[in-house]
Image 1 (cartoon, one colour):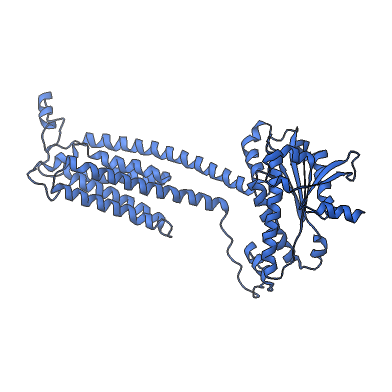
Image 2 (cartoon, rainbow, N blue to C red; image 1 turned 90 degrees about the vertical axis):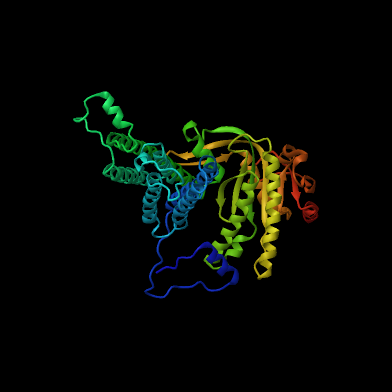
Length: 478
């Protein structure tokens, strides 16, 4: 059974020159990792639970600040204790949200939330002072809205099932409480057959011990309707969240195969003629490891893959940091463009700064490689700026968004020219002029002169870096 190794594993073993491990015969294969989509959706749900918890905390703080204005002590301390209990009922499932029992715990504590609120609403406080109203009065005020608030808060869970469960718990617990009061011996009930006049009906309704089953039915029906509407809204929001998450995961996965800025442009402008061929001025950069073919003959395949992976990771990061687009990998090299997706007046400057930054990164990487006896690598870069055709090129079932034209050919020839001149960067004068004074390190380039590039009739004026390599090339020619 083949070993399954991460990129970091390969890098470590390549650097330390240790043999790669081989799993024992008959060993069980590791469990496949969860898909990126499943992880992304799970993270969004977890973020929703975190948001719901902190919204609960903010709401409790608001109620705690409001209580002193409407409740006097000692009843104030009773309700503050209730708020503390309600906070605890939210804290426990929050702390267990990533456990294996997270789902049943959430459903259980929703029920406990509803029971706590209903009990506080229906049962008189043990410290009631001089208030001695009949207990039936407890279900005739607006305190039922606290249970509605619990229902509304369940929408923050991003779960339609939680909303439905909360609504059912509210209806069930509230109905049990009201029916318990309805069946008390001193409760006044409305009997349509025994009421002869409207005055008698009014007298019954205003009795402090009166409990209305009709009112309970209205509350139940309206709560169920509100629950259904809220659950549908949450389901729609959840569906939109999943579609957005899928799109983001797809974009991130797509960006592993194309440049991230190209992936963004395609996802945003796919329906607006993305990739239609156009002509604009772009800067093209070619980079290649000098002598890699000979080096590859001395290295085992896995070390070659690790070396190229590290090289591409470092270079791509710098290209993206400078606003460039990775057009394609070319084995031990790559082609990058600046200003290809849309017109960019800073394209030439960005390309030159990127070339110098790539060489600085190669110097840092070589210093690290030398500490463990690794081979020193030389990066050859060619940069040119000019008009080119940009767009989708290829067959109907296999397109590539790329840049073609004489500008690309010149940049490629300049990269090859570095072998002849002994320099590390060869830049056309057209690129230097377009970059103007804003280019980082512009003065570090030295004029090589007019060069006849292979395959072209018109010569190109070339500048090289580092300094004095042009002088060395002239001396070698003489």
